[in-house]
Length: 40
Image (cartoon, helix red, strand yellow):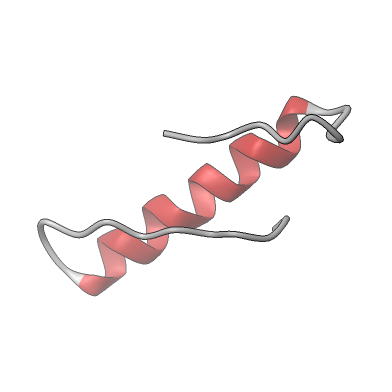
């Protein structure tokens, strides 16, 4: 899941944050939720 900020003009920023959170969760183990609050 990712939130797109209204100030973002490029969807790539939101996808990048979602991707970063996904890989953080995968490295941390099973059944994890990770959040990235700032632009990646």
